[in-house]
Amino acid sequence: MKKDYQSWQTATKVAQGLGAYDTATNGVVPAIHTATTYYRDADNQYRSGRVYSRDNNPTYLPAENLLAELEQGERALLFASGMAAAVAVFQSLPSGAHVITPKVMYWALRKWLVEDAPRFGLTVSFVDMTQLEEVKAAIQPELTRLIWIESPANPMWQVTDIKAVVQEVAAHNITVAVDSTVATPIHCKPLVLGADMVMHSATKYLNGHSDVIAGALVTREQTSLWEAIVKHRKQAGAVLSPFDAAQLLRGMRTLAIRVERSSANAHELAQRLSKHEWIREVLYPGLPSFAGHETAKSQWQDGFTGMLSIRVKGNERLAIGIAANTEIWRRATSLGSVESLIEHRASIEGVGTPVPDDLLRLSVGIEDVNDLYQDLCTAFETAARSTS
Image 1 (spheres, rainbow, N blue to C red):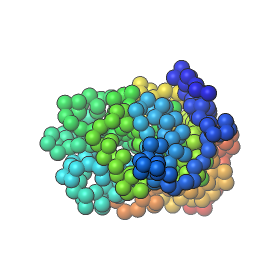
Image 2 (image 1 turned 180 degrees about the vertical axis):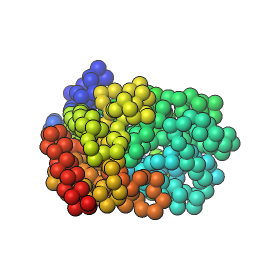
Image 3 (image 1 turned 45 degrees about the vertical axis):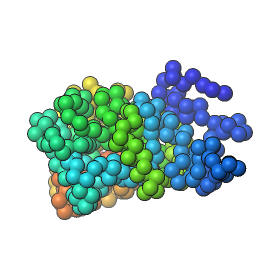
């Protein structure tokens, strides 16, 4: 039942899960393997290649193979969470290494870099990744070992020119890794643009149903850093359960249609909201007025993601009031799922956040776009009356 998936289009690859199935029964869905350990051969060998399930459960393989194919990488690894995947990269660097990361990025990882990375002998420079000169100026030729890009960057959605950064550091021995959680392999393929590694919080768009915590890394080729990451996953045990791996694959099989719908909804909402009387600014790479629009248009395909942020004409109280008065938009942390979520990011991130207090982050789902828009409009009016 071998399939020639190399010629398939992306939508076919994800819907088919690269043709993965249960080889023992010919079931159309791959099996979930719950065994934690495996028989040793009579002569004390392990010719099956499997010893212990912590880092080598066969349930991981269909999702890893699909993601590696979508990103056009050599190999993918699943982790217990997006944070586990990201931290594995940093903890696999040699002590004393210097890394360059964005000023605006996923807040939990930024906090880890500020508070915990120094304990592992790492030094970190936070720069504006949209300014190539800042990246260049931050490089320490003998020490910099990693440039971590997040594009688009949560929650302001700055877009980094990945290809330009790769070209800038080509003369140095620096790994370029990209958090492409929001762009997904549907919109952007960082490895094709020259990056060495891609990270996904698979909890978000890859799974897409708010019921699995998972992370993933994909490498363009096997390197010493990648081998260190493989070792780290095994020794640290940062793996997800077989059931979650199977659920992740199931979610990934609808990735193409979910991302297409959420991105179309977000684009329509961004256009409408940019004309709304209560909106100061709409942050969305699909708008020609957005600073990173041209870069996104040149490096992305099939849309501009399902994430946008709005800055309201008012203060924190008004912004929180708007979120409090939505009915369809759910007030919850996370993004990339079928249901639409709204969140006041500054109060979530707390002291030190670079996020304006008038900003609301919107994760646009697959609902009817008119319902989503009307729900926001009603919430604007209700919040304005209560705060006036």
